[in-house]
Amino acid sequence: MTLKKLLLKLLRYFFGNKPLVEEVTIVGSISNGRLHEILANACPMAEIYLSDNVYQTITKRDLERKLALSEVNEHEFYDEVMDCDDFAYALHGELSVPPWSGVPFGIIWTNVHAFNLFVDDTDTVWYVEPQSDEMAPQIAAWQGSEVQLIVM
Image 1 (cartoon, rainbow, N blue to C red):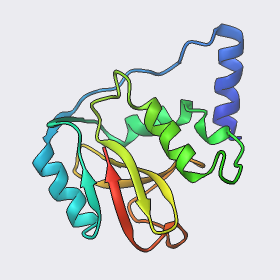
Image 2 (tube, one colour):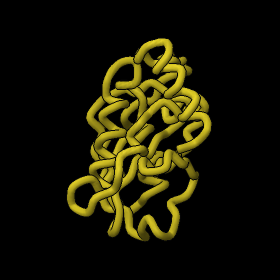
Image 3 (cartoon, rainbow, N blue to C red):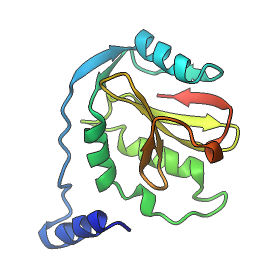
């Protein structure tokens, strides 16, 4: 557990369980077509399913603030019970309610791993590892070499 998360837990303990940062600043919007184009360029072999016609863009920094509050990455890993897909679905679930539900954040499946991805206000694709909250502009080698499915 990081020092930041420990401090947040202490603040929650003493001042209640209400989230400390739930605000998100909507910077703009992105159409389904444009988002599909960005994702197809980043992952050309993937099947892409987008459920909304328009998405609300936010900064990478706002997502980092949300991840700092999330406790998904604190769950213990158990094969077939709480493994990569469960972490990815849990984090996606946290971002599937207002004020986050319109943000282009989803689940990505490769040939070996499931994790999350996010498109920010600059049209940059970020790959989010829900077990560590790390964000990267590229898929790490251990996360797989063939993107098969993206769902947002």
